[in-house]
Structure formats: C-alpha cells, structure tokens
Amino acid sequence: MLIGSPVLADPEALYQENCASCHGENRLGGTGPALIPETLKRMRGPKVANVITEGRTATQMPAFAEDMTADQITELAAWLKTPLDELPAWGEEQINASREMNPDYVQVDAPVWSSDPMNITLAVETGDHHVSVLDGDTFDVLDRFPTPFAVHGGPKFDPKGRFVFIMSRDGWVQKYDIYALKEVGRVRAGLNSRNIAMSADGKWLAVANYLPNTLTILSTEDLTVATVREVKGKDGTPSRVSAVYQAPPRESFVLALKDVPEIWEIFYGKNPPQFGFAHDWRTEGLAHTDIPFPLRKITTPDYLDDFFFDQTYEYVMGASRSGEGGQVIDLVIGQKVADLDLPGMPHLGSGITWKYGDTTVMATPHLKDGTISVIDMKTWETVKRIETMGPGFFMRSHENSRYVWADVFFGPNRDKMHVIDKETLEIIKTLAPVPGATVAHVEFTKDGKYALVSVWEDDGEVLVYDAETLEIVKRLSMRKPSGKYNVWNKITFSEGTSH
Image 1 (cartoon, rainbow, N blue to C red):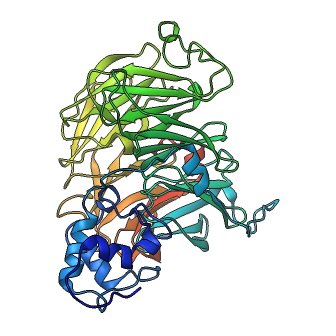
Image 2: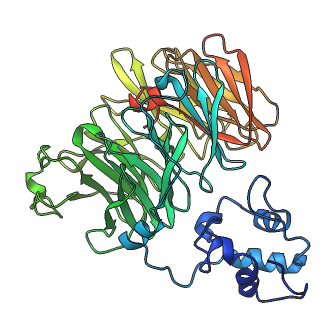
Image 3: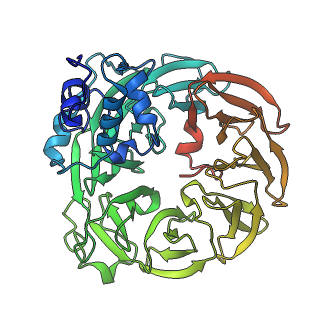
C-alpha cells in the first residue's frame, strides 16, 4: 500500500498504512515476521532501514524507497526497535488458533527419492530463509523449501529421521516430511523463541520462549498444544527460557533459565521419575504423578543459561553468566558437585566429546577469547587450553574422524577454520578456503568421510571436504548457509555432534 505524500509522519501511522497488513497490527507478525526488538536484534545498525528502503529479494518484502522519504524510513526503523507497550496473551488458545496444516500434504509410505534416508543432510540458508535437502552421498539437492523468518536453533528430527521440526526466532514451528519432501504444517508456539527439543519417544516437542516467559510443549503428531508452562522461579520471579534440551534416559526436558538461578526438569515419560527424587516430591507435579509433565526445580549457585550434558545425562555442565567459569550440577541429587575452570564465556551449546586415552573429554569454544577448553569428563579438570586465532562459535567432529574442526567466527580471522588432532590436541592445519569470507559450522556425513563447511555469505557456498585429506571435493552454491544437520548424526547422538 502506498502512502499519500512524502511528508514526515508519525512512524506508527506509517507502520499501520504500509506494514500492518503483512506484519500484524501489533507488530507481532503475520505473513511477515514480528517487528519487535527481540526479533530485530539480528539486524543491527542501519540494516532495518536498508530493508525498508530496498526490500528483500526472493521474498514478499517490497522496496519502499519511492513511497517514503529517507527521513520517514529512518523514523520508522527507529520506532520498530522500541519495545511494545504491552504484550498480548499467547497461551494455548492463541497457539492452537495459529496452527496451519498444509492441505496439499499427503503422507507417503516410502521416500519419493532413492537416497540413503540416514544420510540426508539439511542445510539452512538464512539469506532467503530456505532449507536445502541434500543427498549425503552425491550432495544433490533433493528439495529446497521456504522456512519461517530467521530460523534459530538447530532443527530437530524425530527418532526415525523422517520428520524434521524447524523453529524461527519469532516462535513459528514448522513440520516437514523428508520422505514426501512436503511441509506438513506450522504453528506459532511463542512470540520470541530460542530453540526446540525433541522427546526421546518422538511424541513431544518443547519450545523455549523469551516472549512470553513460557515453555510450550507440542504434540509432534498434529502440532497441537500439550501444555504451556509459565516460567517463574521458586520465589515467583518470571524468567525467560534460554534453552531447552532433552535428556533421553531420564525421559525429561531440561531448561536453562535466563533470569533465575535455577535448572528446571520437566518429565514426559509414563512412569514417575525413578532417579532418587524422594526429597523433591513436594515440588510441582511430582507429588501427583497423574499430573502431565511434572516439574522439578533445582536451585543453582549462579545463573546458568548454557548447558552441556555428560553421556549418562546425570551431570549438567553449566556456563556462568559472568563468563568467569562454570559448574557441574548432579541432576540426581540436585546439587553442584564441581566447579569448572572456564574463563572467556564458553559456548557449551556447541561442545562436543570424544575418547581421549582412558577417559572422555569435552571441548568447547569461547565467545570472548581465542581459546578452546578441553575438559576431562571424569575429573572435571581442564586438560588443555588450545589457543586459536579468535573467539569461536561452533565445533564438530565424528567418531570415524581423527580430527576436530573449529571456526573462529568472531573477529578479523573469521575466514579461518582450525583442524585439531584428537590425540595430540594440537592444531594441525588452518584452512582459509575463501579469503575474507566467514567460514563456520561443520557437519559430517553419516560415515564421517566428508565434512561440510558453510561460507556464511549471501552469495555463499557449502564446501564439501574430504575429511581425511582436508581437500575440497565439491562446492554447493547457497544463500548465506549457516547450520547443516545430518539425520544419522543427530538421531544417534554422534559423539562429535552437539545435542
């Protein structure tokens, strides 16, 4: 819709006339994404104004350069970055009302393609909000489908690897059938969301929300709401959910909370918890096992909004918000059992493990300094700090590979990728495949023979490396590819994959 004349106007009026039909009268999204600070944080500086001015290619977002003056666009962009005066209710009724099932979807009995179902890899392309479905043997693109705006957090596969669930920053959850190469449907589980977790039995999908302060649990069958749990600490303090993870042997979801020093564990199994919770039976739901999704709240010495689990899922390694260290919480007894020497704000959500001598080690990049910390999972002691060319974000390996791959996503050396020997803990090679271009996030094929690296640029690529010779064997053009996710590695919890 065009505005009448290029005069200065109230930015709210500009929004209602030009934007509301797609982005909603309350800025919370419609056919377009939510335009609120929590969603727009990814578009720093003048980028919001640029999008209004120039539009977005390959989307329904038009250019408004001829319809608004530069001053009007500047005012509108600034107004979009202001918080809403009031957040609307977004509970079970609103979530179910947002549910959209694809009327053209028909379930198939077998894949419509002949590739290995366990070696399918999804590549998220953030440049134009699509996902490419790759054959892990030939790297042919089987499908390329649109996603909600700004996919955030890794997609989650059901235990058989047939369906994948994808979440956007503004709370939309999309279900896609890999066998049929068709979207099944989508639902808006929150207004601003962080990540999702799949239950071990494949029946439930948990959605961690910043806005509102809730955890939404959906039925994976039809995307209807199973429960919406308001998140408040033991003292009643509301909290955003930083992340949610599944703990398969415990039949539970474990929540990292942003605003209260607690860990939450929500159970979805049929049986009451069997992990020594006698002292916790007075907490919500545990005294009444007929209540769905009983909740346990564990007080922690510090705020922990990033986690890593040991192989038994008894121990949680948490990063302290101060960035000066971490701690180990025993979920069975509900107490801290060790401190971790982890300066530099570790990114535990990208941590990986591998066998190292007679023990297992966990390695994590750091967001504030050029360090990778390697920790003994038996003693919780730091085995080594590996110095890198800058702060990193992602690490990957594979049980069939002798190498760990680590990016240096932040800083001037973001075009580098380190390859580290698992036995010596030394960097044996530093790759620079596209000088000046950000390279990040590695995923392996099912057998670990190939490593896929993102050239994280709008006219980017996914580079396919021979994981042994470290030579590029194929280049796949993509629009700002970010994460890649191999079905087998994810559903088997490969030791080189973050979970």
